[in-house]
Amino acid sequence: MVSDVPRATRPTGPTSRGSAPDPAAQSPQGLEMVTRSWREHPLRRITPWLFLLVPLGLLITFTYVPVGNMIYYSFTDWDGVSPERNFTGGENYAQLFTRPELFRVFFVSFYYLAASAVQIVIALYFATVLSFDLRFRNLFKGILFFPYLINGVAIGFVFLYFFQDGGTLDSVLSWFGAGGDHAWLGDAESANTSLAGVSVWRFTGLNFVLFLGAIQSIPGELYEAAQLDGASRWQQFRHIIAPGIKPVLSLSVILAVSGSLAVFEIPYIMTGGATGTSTFVIQTVKLAFQFNKTGLASACAVVLLLIILLITWIQRRLVPDEKVDLV
Image (cartoon, rainbow, N blue to C red):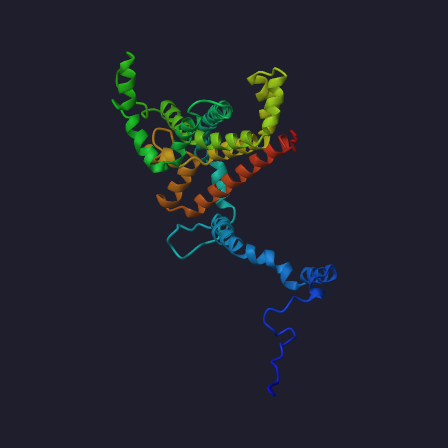
């Protein structure tokens, strides 16, 4: 018996569930049209700027706006508290360049510049040695990098007790027959030498990590070929490692020079700038917050910024970055 109820027909069309995709949309011509439409879409052009919006906003807010305010304050006599800011023109800069005692503190930076050279040599040596197969090299890597992870204030207080009269250093020296209480922070020469030594101990780890990463990025096939040719460790360093880490070495020199000019944390914590250990940054901070001469302090900060930029530019001109292809 044949039923009179019509048989249910299967719906067709694009609205049916589980329907097959349109072959035209999957064809190469269809994909090309979709890709071309996205390339020409206005949203694609502004997408990179949408990703850059937040970091650019933070950079402008916390870097360029404060620098602009600092430059503006350098042309005023603002004391840092009063709402009145009288425009004085270049009076602060004239006072800065006509008072030798304000620039004399730059001589202290030579101690830290020499210490930076020492720490670069030490970091490069250990990075080269530990880049080869050596027992306990991971332990030595941690030991070298650990001082950089410690807070600078804590380091200042630790070494303050280390260098005090009859402190840790004098106790250690007494074991070797060189006992006696020494005023390590009592005069300018020994104090600056001691503080520079602290900076070597702290920042060697940073240069060590930079050099080690650059050395490990060099292809290992070059070392194998050099060993097959009978090259010594020194020859490998001279002809493979040194050219390969030249950009990182240039960066370390820039950081060393700028850091030696802008030293603040360690000498401020340990001596407060006394006994001839005051740096240009410590002097600037005292002018602003101790003597309420924010305008003059801002002029000092602007001059320091210009000096660092000038030295960096000269260094980049003398030692430009070269593309090194070791493969």
